[in-house]
Image (cartoon, rainbow, N blue to C red):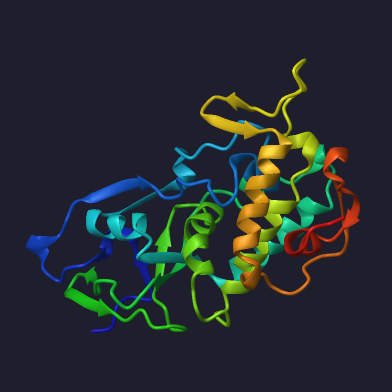
Length: 271
């Protein structure tokens, strides 16, 4: 019997035996803001500072414990559909051309609901996956491009960020989801204006961090170094020129000011 076209999260497991099924577990999917800081994501997703909530239900996925572990370890990735990725890139474009206080909010443009994701294994050592149905279990063949579709409540922007680091390590850059995800990661890292991420100046004038709840915001110097370090490590992963010129204003002391394309900033030192 063929597995159903759309699979519920709870139906997925690493065993074909009912007695061996592990309990359903709800986890927060995206937990690491190393690639893009919380500040960058808040700006790029149309949020205000401090509004990014990684414990939100929009960032939660309910699957069996063995599958949850595979997701946590990055052994399997959830990839939004091609149609959804295209819409996400279009949304990111709309943020770029919007004024700071007029950015569209991603959770309003993409309201909560059921979303479809492709299951993509990170390597050949990933355990075999099975889907449970009324008549028993079927083995899932996670072979691109005919990847099985999983239906979940977790929001696609959180899903994309959780899978991003694994996607950038994929050898085959021709995979359909590689370019839109790398585009969004690049844009998240370079479009956040200084006035959004910089804390109010202090008497000392030194670079430091400021906290809002559980979220940390960095002054421009520390944040620039973090972004530049990541971009340097992904030069070979970046897609062709992405967007028209966008204004970026950096500290005068850094010698960065004027109109540059996001790709120019990502790929070279601007003098």
